[in-house]
Image (tube, rainbow, N blue to C red; front, side):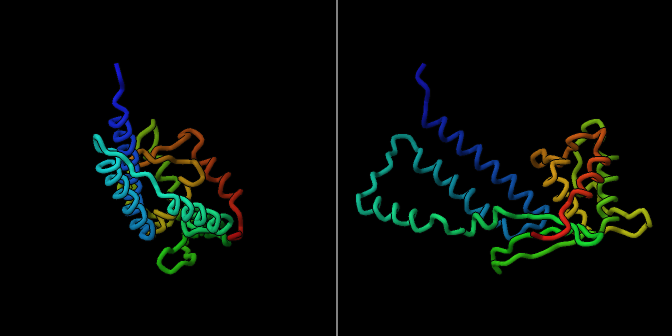
Length: 206
């Protein structure tokens, strides 16, 4: 049976669009506001691409020689020059400053770095809460951890919980399960792995 290649292409693009929708939800949940607009633009572009370029019977127009030449020129100019997309791809970064976990992000609007911090007791509190809630492969939503308290009884600021969760994900200790939440990658050795990664964390931002 002959395959409908156009439909396969539309399905692939729809899958990509759903992936960006999940990223948007994550950006909102983790207050990565600088990422929301570019992610939204890509999702819209994917939807428009599926609607127009891959519509039945549509045919992409051939680029003129002048247009192809201009495209090649832009590509040559762009090589070796860091783009905003490449710059943002380097973030977030994490390091330790004394007993604080520091998350370094990139502000698209202000075109500079920004920092969020969480003290080590907050890191331990989040790790313990995830270890308890994530046993037996359970998926954990961040909002179900809130409000969260230190061992001393004081409350961990919500933004600090998000900073800690972002680091755990970046370190490969938890993985996101779509919109459902997060799962421990190794429940049995999770807290030991957190302590080991904390010790290995760079102590400067470079």
